[in-house]
Length: 141
Length: 141
Length: 141
Length: 141
Image 1 (cartoon, rainbow over the protein chains, first blue to last red):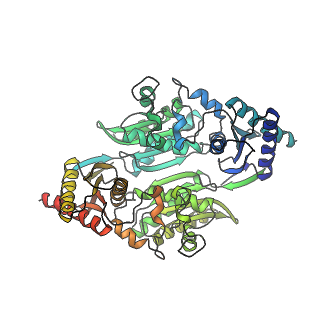
Image 2 (cartoon, rainbow over the protein chains, first blue to last red; image 1 turned 60 degrees about the vertical axis):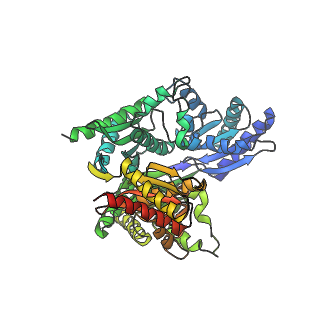
């Protein structure tokens, strides 16, 4: 057997709080999803004004980032036409997200969860995801 | 009626063993899936550190390679924008994989199964799939 | 954050080996799936003569048992007509299995994974799943 | 490796022809599907007046009968409330059919394919499936 470290619900709330604050600051209401390191959902919030379609997308971004241990925008680069991972975007029933806004949450060099943001531009989504992680990291001391 | 030749469970284990050894050699833990010639799963292993997303992807790469009798990277070429098979990646609910790492297992000019590898780069996945086949072939005398 | 204990690949192989031996003893070739505590697949084998339909069913039984922390036959009881969980069988796209043959793998009062067996009668499937767990437990000292 | 015997396209046409004749005789236009022993579709016909919904149902009945090596009406009995396989009807995304009309095609004690019929009552569907098999068997000498 082995032991793995993962986000708990308090961590998930911190991540959402940090992301939500940044989303408020830039004026883009977001869907915010947090998964554990296996890609399973821990917490989710759709801010007032967040897009309904973005619920699934945010969850799938967090899933991809955690379970593939990779930022979704990195898949975006790797899956462009002519690039090696071209076509990966439709894998796993379309859950494999290659659009920016999904980041693995890393602690002491291990992926412990994922955060996925959707409703803004991919650049905004990514920025808000990073802000969630930064806020959470600041609490880890 | 007709008779078809296909991999059995011992073959599947040999293929996994060969692929696993190569994955260890290059230091990339992989998900490894083996299907029969109809694309139906025979055996699967997720190595320690293999990605959770790669379980489905490896199985679908093996399915595609066996059932379409074609290496998945060949679909990658054929499905680029402007090419005839453009868009095929999302077929069959996204199971049709066009990313490298799925190879048909061929015996005496017939497809007898498929091997699918995922967790590394597509080039690494393909290399490990080939190593699985090479190890299995070496046992066929 | 928190720490969770889960099966590793060696554990999965032990569980498969134990289940496979029992399946051989009773003369019913089985599909055997092992997941981690999050319900994500670690290893799978379809024995010679195991049913093709049982591949998905075994994987989904293991998923259900691990991720719901409940034996699938317990869901069978709870989901009978007139019972509180009636209709749960079609949840999660049909992945929530209520037929016997899926057991959580428990270690020191915690669910560390799941085993799912399919191809025999539900009673046989459950017996083989239990044998897999017993064989694995015997190795834990 | 191993060798398996399965229906070819000529067999599939014979099975459809026999089923179609019986459907005409009883005045119920049917959807008729034939799969190989792995449950993969070989041939399909929707008779004039056959139901559109029955296309998928016939294919899934043939898939179930072949890949589970079991008549679908036997699953119907085994999956009644209180019976051991209760709840199996929604397995494999709902493809596991427990309604009569799917029969394995057996040759020399081995399942070599499946036939699935839909559009009539389950009893009619089963009767027409059996007629397809009888007509095909008569040609095997």
